[in-house]
Length: 381
Image 1 (tube, rainbow, N blue to C red):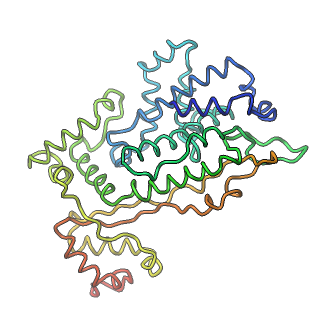
Image 2 (spheres, rainbow, N blue to C red):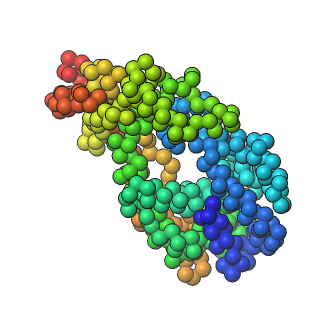
Image 3 (cartoon, helix red, strand yellow):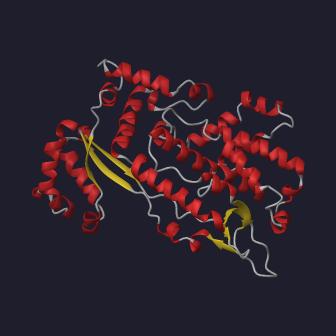
């Protein structure tokens, strides 16, 4: 909320907004509307993540009904009678749809019609490149994990954010739609943000032990939760927090009769599965289905109950946004920055095995890996 408000104050500052942008966004010339939308933005940023399940993203897609995610749960809460009453009591009252639009963005609130202004304000929160949510979670996670990977000069980045035309237009051309961008002097800070994201994903979020704990947590919750799903109605959703789940895991870890006992024991007693194999470029060059073949072979030999696979496919494309260069023209960030063009996607595909079998399985896999990847028949392995 604090970051989103700071970004809003910078990009709507009349001293830095060009006449061209003012003509495209009449809200910038209306003081009452500016005050109203600042309050909507702050509330939307505050409520952006209220729909998260215990332990945040862990196994979200497996623990909610089809078609549901934490953004949809956030919307249910924002639109609930209890919270709607709060928005109506504010002066002036805040429209619920306006809060939903800015909290979720066009991709997650597709049934709502967005103006250009509303789209830009949603990007202030949920933008893939320089949104407040991304800035916040990188700094916060870096701090609490005790690592330096997620730190960058966010003060400089925020100070150089601007509302800019999405592309350069020549004289006489129709003005380009405005978007959230940066001054040329801030592009290094934007590079640092996106590099910090890459490093946090590759070094922290995708760490093998952290990932297998998510898998054991998912397996526990699927057995412990009624029907294997979290409730989606507001009161049911709010009744589950990290505390309830942690207490349940602790109890189940030491009681063989409790649902999810074996998974809870793996978590609480640090008996988690160990990394056995992860995707390797040499193996993929021989067979694009190398990880599939290894997973099938290991499961067949040691039993599916003793093996887990963890996949995280590459998502999205390269982050692009407008940059105003020193001569006043607009360029794309990707055309200005070789760093941004070269940032690799984070991809994960790994196989884990029960800790008691890991040494034997490693020896067996070392001896059989070439035949398994070549997929030359069961008799070979």
